[in-house]
Image (cartoon, rainbow, N blue to C red; front, side, top):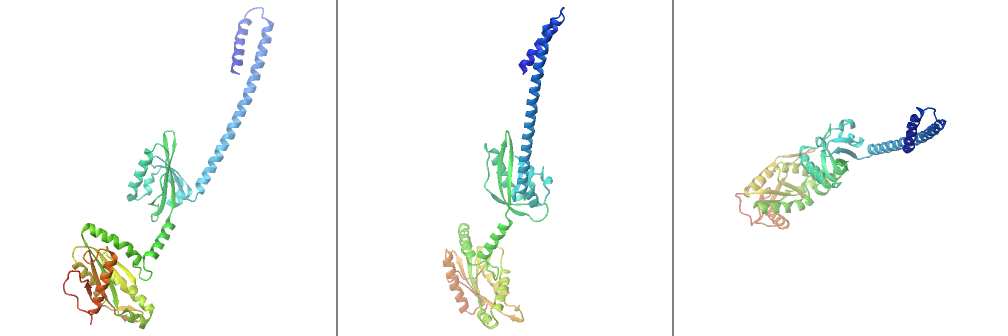
Length: 370
């Protein structure tokens, strides 16, 4: 069309030159009308093409808007939290789920740094991940990692996060998948409680000790320190159980557990071995005297009456002690030697403690119960 219009324009210029001459050639007017007719026809065709293009463009825009709305709906209906940020972690968009998770309106998320929602102790790890991702030449996705997010209101929440990148030319966008794992953590804690803690007393159980003690012994070997493994058995507990019933016996075990635990340091471990037997692990020792002092406190803690229902009960405990490394270098040996020392304590009057024969003497024993 452009060629035809140019040709018509040139003919019009020629017509203008000829029209100044006299007489005017009638054929020039005919030529001019023909050219004008051609131009109008071309303009009409061009107009139709332009209208068709505009209609196609409008339809394409409508499709884009439909797809955008569909994406926005999916974005907002997703059960997990999604965030879009720039390469520095400044939030550009967030869906309904993440807004609910953080208890923050969607619009209020925009422009805020993602670091704002992380506790200080978790930020360094995220900075390292951002640096690693931004250095990658190709789009990457991290493995999920667990962290805690700070809500606008309420307690921090356990989440699993996955971070991936999307490159548009020179710019990088970060895509955040945030999954609430509160229920998962609760179930894990419940399973751990059932597997590693005694249901009656709440103390760690044998399974916990099996996992814990080898680590403590290995650490003591590296640090050249002592570890005491003590076997505790309640004196004449069977008499209470038989005369007053298992209900009273269970309550007695609960109160005894609390009294014994109050005699220990934070790093000490008291385990319910089973029945009326307990295991005590005392680590980071430089002398056996600290063990003796702990045993004195535990025995003394049980001398006062224990009220249960209408009863005022008395109970004592005998303790046998084995020391790492002189009495054994492994769990089985130490427990066996502590058990042997326990029988020595019971045979020598009860409500007292004895070290295994291979251990050095610590001084006079507390007087046995009469």
